[in-house]
Length: 399
Image (tube, one colour):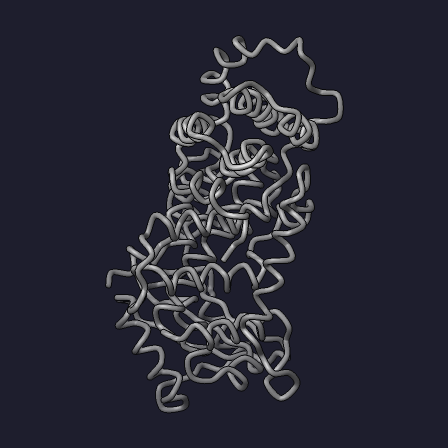
């Protein structure tokens, strides 16, 4: 299987868009100018501060590397290094002078065995094959000129999807969901098997608890989530469980489109709450929700008391009055949708649709007219129909 086929679609779409951003281009141009004057000295620094793991010194690790390289189609000389650290960690450094460097902490290399280590190696190779180093997020966020808030949020959102792609590369190499889950659990907790007995299902219950909180109308991810470069480990394991159920796995049957929709729903748990945000983007999303919610509620037999109650849970008590011009909102809906597409990411638009589903479901099972409006909105918002089906038919369960 071609490794490019495994890449998360939101990773790729955000990656391509960010590469065209003027601030990202400026940083890349500056880095390219610096590289023309000579290599950054990464290899020299690694040789001075770490131990290079040659094939003779670490035949088992190199055997795993060879297997991952073959599965992912990597074609570049690779050097492995280990450095002293009590923390579990690994990293892949942007190639220098035709070599790729992968580093492991000593504690990780000692503790991770078999498929756990294959997953880590494959994950780091994934960052290389998907060219994630082409967006130097660290330089952009910590440079002299800080990016505007919209770009910063897009960078963090892209980084989380990039981790999903790298996780898929690692899982493709490991071919063992239990080991992959255990590896992510250990990376998060810092614990070894000697201290605790890992249970995959119980680890995933954290996602269910997060989802239960965020499913409350008006709730959303705390600000710290928006600026996280990595999805929470339970979310990553849940996303990998979907991956193992997909057509990309040996025994999986889930279509690729359904996989991507499932991942987007998971990572929406870490998106900003537009209902309380102060940005122009949040205001645009709120205006869309206000109009779309009332148009959906009115699509069949008028707006019910149950629908008004749910609508006001999102927008505020007393926000609905009989004086609202529903015909005007219907006429303005396309314009509000277009504006939303211009300023938001796919995941943000999915968050609005997910909230709209609560309104549609307020008085029971949504009927054909309400579903038709939801589907029309999804297509105009460039969101897959499957997402609407999941929101309307399921009880908001993630598994």
